[in-house]
Structures are given as C-alpha cells and as structure tokens.
Image (cartoon, rainbow, N blue to C red; front, side, top):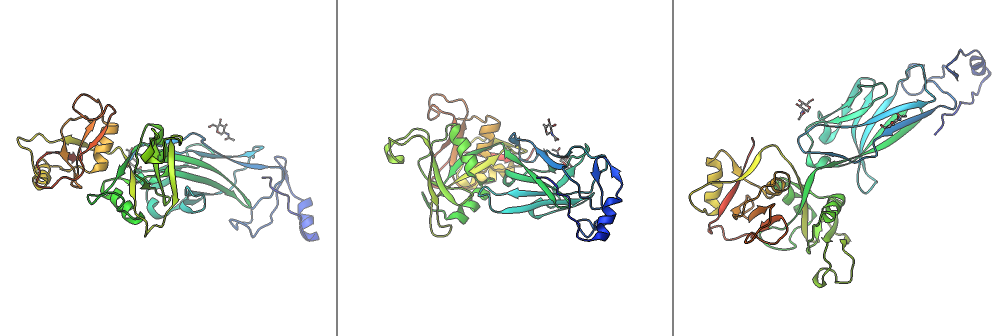
Length: 359
Ligand SMILES: *[C@@H]1O[C@H](CO)[C@@H](O)[C@H](O)[C@H]1NC(C)=O
Ligand SMILES: *[C@@H]1O[C@H](CO)[C@@H](O)[C@H](O)[C@H]1NC(C)=O
C-alpha cells in the first residue's frame, strides 16, 4: 500500500506546503490532529511501509520462552525515525475472531487476557518489534499477527507458532461418545492436555495416527484420522485422511475427544514397589514417593519426548491402566510404538502405577 500525499483544502495550507523544508526526498508537513497528536504527523509520497515476519513454522516446547520475529521497514529508507504503534493479535483458525495479545506505543505496552504479564516486545535491532512469549502454554499454539501502524498506514504479517506435542484420543470410563464439546475440553484439561486443533490432528495423522472413533477438536468440528481405510471406519474405498463430520452442536452432540499434550518439566516413571496395588493404594504410593499419580497427557508426553518404555501396566490418575512402549517387542502389544490402553478396570484390581514428579 502506498502512502498518499494529502490534497490540502485551503490556500493557507497550500502555502505551508510550498514552504516546506525539503529533506530526504520527501515533503514534510505539519498537518496535525492525526495519530499521536504531537503535530508531527508526516505524510509522504511513494514511501512504502513493509512488515516482515518469518514464513517458517516456529516450534517450541511448553514452559519455555519463544520469540516471534517481526521487523518493519520503509522503502525507500527514511533518515528520520518515526513514531509507530505495534499491535500483536492472535488469529483464530476460523480466520474470523482475533484477540489482542499486546499493544505498544513507544516504550509503553499493554498485554491482554491470558497473555497478561507473559509477553513483551523485543527491540534489539532498529525496526524490530518481535513478540516474546514467556512460559509457553499448550493453548498458545496458533497464528499471531504483527501489525505496525504509522499514521494512516497499517501493515501486518503472520507468524505461525506450534508447540511440539503429541495428540491422543480420549474417552471417559463410562465409554464411547459421552462428551459434549464443553466436557471434552474439560476432559483434556484434567489430563494435563488441551483439546487438539485440526492442524495438530492432521500432523498426528501424517505421523501415522489411525483412530476409528470420532472426536471433538478445538474449532467445534468432529473428525477422525484414518491411515488404513477399512469397512467399519468410513469404508475401504475411501482414501486415507482425516475424515470430518463437520461442525456439531456443542451441547447436544456427544463424541470422544482428541487431546494435545506437550513436553513438560519433570518426569514420569513406573514406581518400584514390592506389590501390585489397587487404585487407591496406587495414588497413595505415588504420594509417599513425593510424587503424584501420572495423568494420561503426561504419560503420552513422556512416551513421545523421553522415550518412556515399560512393559508393565500401571494405574493413571483417571482410573485407566496403560503402559508406554517406544521399542515394540514380543508380549508388549502391537508392532507399532504407542501407549497401550487397558481401559478402566475395576478399582480393586491390582496393577503397578505410573507417578509424575516435578524435578
Ligand atoms: C525480511 O526478512 C528477511 C529474512 O529474515 C531478510 O533477509 C530481509 O532483509 C528482510 N526484509 C526487510 C525489509 O526487513
Ligand atoms: C523466560 O523469561 C523469564 C522472564 O524474562 C525468565 O525469568 C525465565 O528464566 C525465562 N525462562 C527460560 C526457560 O529461559
């Protein structure tokens, strides 16, 4: 977009135009009442504001700090610094809703919502307005818009942030297709995870996830990933892919859910204990070890990011029994790596237990 030279309506102003100092190839004018109100708003001709972000996907892990790069420039270059405003917003996957992350004018900035106190601008280089997000959360994945506003000119670029993570299907103890959308979100949160986005499920499908039950995603659609087409899962003749039931009613319709978990500080381990334990004793045994019983999202993250591998079934916090295999072998389930699931046995049955400790 090109800045336009303002047509000045009165002779008086025309006079001031003709007597303007000539500098750097541009006509500077004292037209005011715009923008920062200091009377130095400058209109100039043929200068372009350019905002430059990274096209590459930026990958990060939960709990770390990340910088989303953004620079701006004037083409051709200006010799005088100009006052700008910067606005970072979060762009939702449906492309409509935006929410403010940070707004900055000069050295003052303000952050919003979940980002309050967790974001600031990095201005190490001239014309740098990168966004730093500290203590990354699972929900921070997504697209961010860097917008630079100079008077009437407004340019922006998009940065795409993805957390390294793992997607897993989840259903509760009372069986298949029991969650409405809101319960699905809560279920993931209770397992130290968040409801997965379509992009996250798609990536998991590319990496081989095959699941024949449909689950909620964060955009309110219900989908399932098929790698090996077969009759009970949408038909043998359909191509592999992520199949969608489309948008479903968030209160009335019930499905499973796909959750997303990322790496974390701390560790998950199989508790060394002389006996197998019922569920209640398993919870206690972890506590006595200075830990808590592990959640489903934690065992998936440990399996994916720490190669946790243990051929012993153990209780988890939701009352399910599972075990993580990263090196498949005889008598430890199917030939693919994965977290094996025994479902939700009676709580009096005895198994081992997986604990989680903040290290
Ligand atoms: C935009 O970014 C690229 C890569 O970081 C860099 O090579 C280029 O010079 C930048 N352009 C501007 C106008 O800042
Ligand atoms: C992230 O940034 C915060 C605040 O600047 C700092 O206290 C913290 O140590 C940083 N964390 C990491 C993992 O670098």
